[in-house]
Amino acid sequence: MSLDTGPMPVARVAGEYRFSQSCKLCGTRVDFTSAQIGEATSCPDCFSPMEICEPGPGQERRPLSDDRFDEPESLAMEATPAEAGRLDSPEALKQRADQFLEKAAAALRAEQREEQDGRFSDAAAGRLLSVFSQGETLTRLAALSFLGVWAMGMFTWQIRRSLAGAAFDATGVLIGAMTFGAMATWLAALAAHCAAMFRGSGSDLATPIPWPGLAPQEWLFALLRLAWAIIVACLPGLAIGGTLVVVPLASWLAGPAVLAIGVCLLPFVLLSMARRNSPWSVYDPELAGDLLAAWPATVTFYQATLLLALVNAMVFGAASLGIPWLAIVQGPFLTASAIANFRLLGWLNIALITPPAED
Image 1: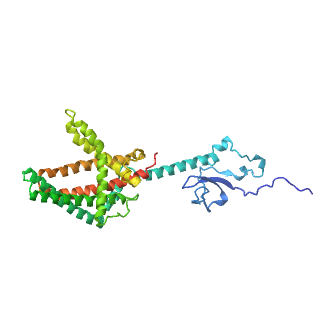
Image 2: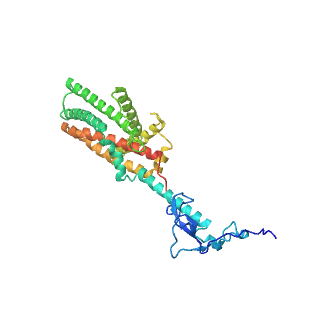
Image 3: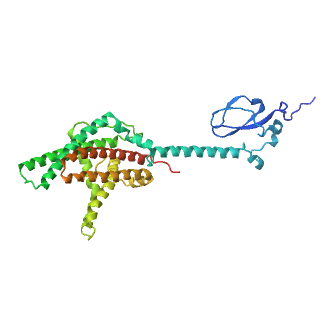
């Protein structure tokens, strides 16, 4: 009796067949046999659960005899052109996987843009302004507004005396000193709170605001830092404005030019100082590129900033009318708009650190 050393035939059940089923999550097609119908398994790519269901009437069913496992010499490492066209071929599976990864990356980019870009949706606006509904913020706004009313009232009173031609006597000196003290106190406290709002604007816009205490030196240092930034930001505007003064028919542009250039450069200077953590680092060479990379956020910020600057200039300029009771409106408005603008500046700083991905 001779021993048969040929390939061992594979036992098959009559009527058994092979079919393919797609993963509902990632779309990967997996081969099953009819004997596995009703069982549960998991996708080999994304590991999500799969229930093996009976194929539909029009779905391809391949007899197990086509597998030809009893003929190893017929197996090939490379798919034939006919096999490459099948939906469950390696080439097709790789294509489906690439499409799945591309869709996932696009969804992630869309989510990042919705949270970070400058289209400023209603949800983003709500997160940004939610800090103003907190009790601590409202309390400090009320205190700062009171200081603002006091300072603007004294300032308007001083202007009213000047318009009336009041003599420069002891009373005028006293009122001038009181006006200077009121304005200095208000601006110092406002500068400290604006700096705190800027530092507290985190990436999720839910970071607690590190409000300043009552230490005078803390307010003074914040005021000096902001004053230095304003001076640096206004220097180019002063140079251009000085040139326009001597140009016929263009002298009226000197004031608006100084204001516009100062408003545009002040955020740049403040962001540069914050990045280097130094009041002397007023120019960061990489900041301009970051502003361009996060262009939607930059445009949104400057739109709001220029609008606030224009309205604030009109509100502050109303003091020249010499109507003291207008301070009741001027103080709260100037206070709230300054803090809101620094909240926006903190939001822009985060957008520059983590700009949205490009499509």
